[in-house]
Image 1 (cartoon, rainbow, N blue to C red):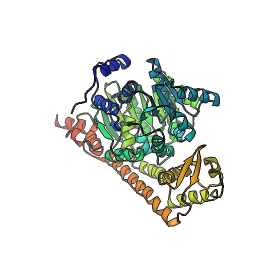
Image 2 (tube, rainbow, N blue to C red):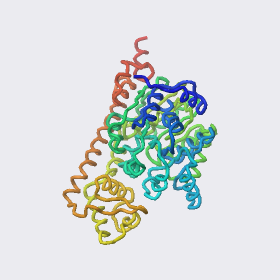
Image 3 (cartoon, rainbow, N blue to C red):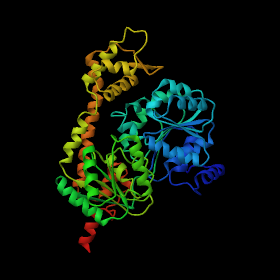
Image 4 (cartoon, rainbow, N blue to C red):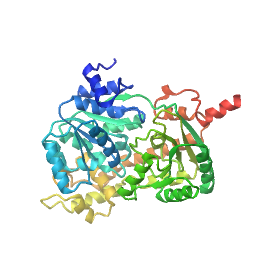
Length: 489
């Protein structure tokens, strides 16, 4: 049944966002949110996901919490809302104590329509105490595939979002992403505890993006092919590489060829990254060589090409990254420089991603050392005596919290509730992570199959994402379809 949208909402769509009508899926998502339903929204990049939560947020009474994965993405959306005269505030780790106190007091006073924050901030019970003093009308998880992709990796606080939602009175949840297979959608529902969420899915196909794969062996061959690619294409673009060293080497190579290029990765200072991003947005930089730290939420409509210098670890990441091209609807080209040796690099990355049984045993034994204390330990205290790296320890603690093995308390403390767990029980808990590792290896093989396959590239992608009904025998604008058409002519 088509969504029933009031004339008042259509007026707000035009007044606040400048649109005369809704794009596919928007009205359905807006209507569901206003009715208080949980919703998972899957829409291609540039198709208007933000309207799906910003419009109902303006309609409902209360404050909307938006969880965002990156400070740059948060700032971009907050600035856009502020420019429209909508009250919005950002709460993140860059604030001074005085700034934070001021903003939190303003939240309590009901000054803001939107509060943008990160999973790490919401993991703090004291910040949740601040938010609880306001009616929360919506809880929005932007780039929701990160719940599945990062929650078990280097952003474990994503695994605690369900706890935050419960603490805030279980408001309606909107989870939005451009990239989600049926399995990822199920994982989002599980991790956020929204099992009955409606799914609004408008498909993945983008006919303006031309896909092609160039086989190349080693850096010398890849750089030769990269030079050919860049010589044929006008406009700006992104070249993705898997390591920081590769980004730096690529940047040097490009600048030596007279290309206005910059390198971008997570080891740069925030100031340096912001400067590079701003110059790219203005058009002062033609090419960004980057790790996957760059691009999430970048709203630059005229990116004409995306090149993958290394094969990503899965088709989800691949689609997310090349999907940053051609947001203006004009033709853009997306090229993978494929070397089957890249599989070894991705296998190396995947090898240390998930906690093993011994990790869970070590984390549990560490918590046992604090069991006799009246005051539960903080993460920092646990870390001082734990043999585990910080990120791995946080993943273990987040899993313990979801299983009721530990309970988070005010001040970011962890109270052990199950000191009686045996090593064999903890090993059983770790099996779920071993299953995830096996699934990662399968997804890597699907990525390789895309690169090596002889069929239509878009058809392969759409069938992988569970949208085979979108696909055609031939899309007409990938390398396989174009070469077949050339042979027939």
